[in-house]
Amino acid sequence: MGTISEKIFSRANGKEVKANEFIIANVDYAMAHDGTSILAVKSFREMGIQKVWNPRRIVIPFDHLTPANTEKTAFLQKDIRTWIKEQEIENFYDIGNGICHQVLPENGFAMPGKLVVGADSHSCTYGAFGAFGTGVGATDMSEIFASGKLWFKVPETIKITVDGRLGNRVSAKDLTLNVIGKISAAGATYRAVEFYGSTISDLSMSGRMTLCNMAIEMGAKAGIVPPDEKTFEYLRGRAVEEYEPVYADGDAKYVESYYIDVNDLEPQVARPHEVDNVCEVSEVAGTNVDQVFIGTCTNGRLEDLESAAEVLKGRQVVVRTIVIPASRSIMIEAIKNGTAETLLEAGVTFATPGCGPCLGGHMGVIGEGEVCISTANRNFKGRMGAGGFIYLASPATAAASALTGEITDPRDS
Image 1 (cartoon, helix red, strand yellow):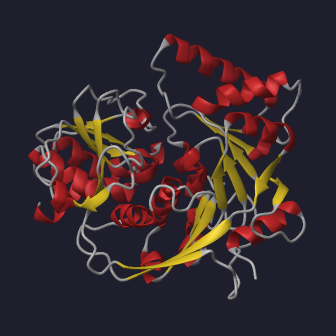
Image 2 (cartoon, rainbow, N blue to C red):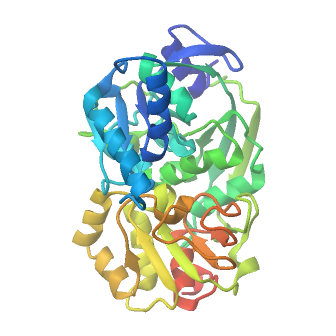
């Protein structure tokens, strides 16, 4: 009678557990990036612990403020690099390797049945691979660094079934925004979400990562797609260890169930300043845009860049347009297959793989009163610069808007 979450936590706890139980779980892999490792290491040192529980199961990518944007940032990153060497942590990915939520899957750390915990809220991305991926605070991460364990409340689970075929230039991002708009920003608070249906099966691994990445935007502790042959193919030659896929039982208990038909789904946009303030692109078409941002852990993968390139090919952007691949390997592939050339010829600006302006760090922060249409996952007030306005959309919609200087339906481009 178990959901995927209940089964993963049962393995991690060593005995069968059910939703709403409080447990101590063994973590398979732990991640902290340059922004959160600083506080995690500070707490770790204050605990007086000399050595981490397992240096091979800790992953630290530098992605949030990379390359360093200030002297203070550079000093803090230098300190973490020193700690990483002292602890003999093997899985360190320095600047330019990419965003943590792309780097971990690319390097085989996100696997079916595993409990993968990151000191970042969008660690739910790993659920695309059938893992229970979730985010925790930096001080919680210090406890994992020390013991490899952490307490959890086993979440109840919502089941979402999606059927139908996504239309021309309608993508996983549009589906994701539509789901969040229906459920609301708090509709899945401290629950896991399992995704089923023909549409989910048809999604690429990149599309599934987009879907699970934004589970936190409806309050979910995790978003999970049951693993299938696409999952296994992606992990073939990548997975760092053996894994055992986990599936929900036929009589698994769900607290809520939703059914969505996407056959008539139109491109979606989330208006400022809430992610669940979702509408069809036609409702905001014509809104002035000062900047376009294509990238992030939500939509910085190769198929996202290719989607933008398809819209922009042979044409010129009329507003500043920033493209940041989610990882170095994605950038290399985009260069090899001509996607990067198409984008650059269209007038976009490429930046170092990483988070960039998504969190208001650098490489594209907007000014007061400016409007940015972004492929990121959050549009909170002040997120990308105090006084700015962020509209969330797919890469195709963002690219179409770059051609006109206003929010534009990509199907018209």
